[in-house]
Length: 74
Image 1 (cartoon, rainbow, N blue to C red):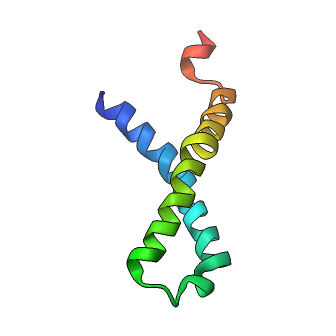
Image 2 (cartoon, helix red, strand yellow):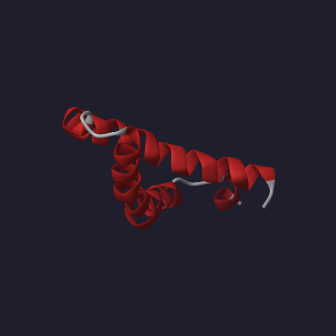
């Protein structure tokens, strides 16, 4: 994979994961605070990885497809 494609993929993942983690911790952080770190990390990842793979990143890709590119103008 070329560097440009890797950067684009990284951006798509970041644009989904940052708000997802922030909201997850906002809503569940206090309740999970009593758990050991490894259990909090497990619950965070078991919830957010499927969200990202099946909902978040596909949604971002569909939104980005709506934005015209230079290639579309020619």
